[in-house]
Length: 362
Image 1 (cartoon, rainbow, N blue to C red):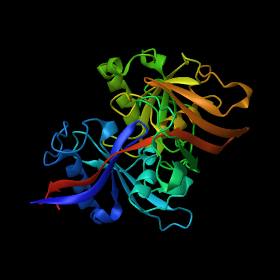
Image 2: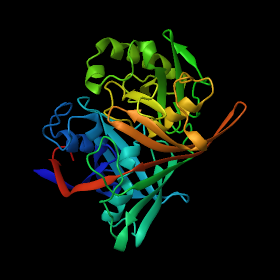
Image 3: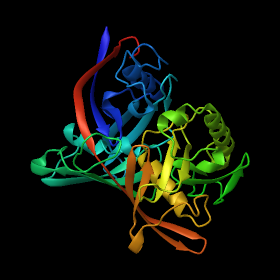
Image 4: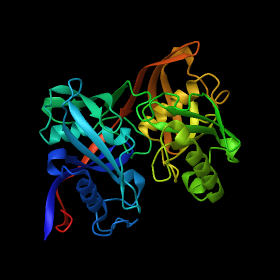
């Protein structure tokens, strides 16, 4: 016997995931995790091919959103993000995912959890993983989610309707501080790094300090075992200093190599998430990386190209193109105030119905 579970699958930004109502999954966390792993991998727990489930055998397609109405007075919807670790047979909840977040409000509208307005619909989403909030606005002409549009997200084919995500007070959401080590620059294993948490714990390093240019392709970087071993050693060493404890089996912090921009952007990036190179860059990873680069005296000093005329929209270059974010900050001596962290994403409903898991699991 098998058990049927209502679900939807949406592309959110440059990721893809399964979306569930919290009420359709077990309340017990351990059982819930077994259920979502089975949804991704089927009976082959730890199968890196995910051949028996709906996962795509890639960290960007092995993601889950669990959505419910929020009990918080300052939020409308609760969103819990689960990263099903490919080949690991376990679930990580220590991070947010800004890409999957882009699909939460469309899912809630499609699932009749949240009423759509004529024109645009907004909701404040509580990101349960970090307790942060994000104001999300989607296009809803005639009270229906519009997926077609002209917004372009590099790393995603074609164009789609824009989804506006304004992150509210996410600094230190995972580690307790914007600068979790207390320093703008730390030296780990002889390499200068800047560690920042503006919604996602990220360690920024100069690519040249690791013996690469920062312009290599994802394939080239994934094949560079020496580089990956060096990055992992630094990651394991700085994790406790960032209040993350032992990060050996965690998906944070992300490791971001920076280099001068090549195509007129603010900075060029190659992000490891954490053991393979991202084909693009994560939403909150881009926000935290840009924040680190703006800090006076950071490892990015002399690397970035600041936009003209006080423009707060920053182009973060990555292997698939660029990621535009709005980052409004104020620097007063040693005080660094983040006024706004915004991003434009897109999403598309791919499928909905019921998925089946072995009855012996639940």
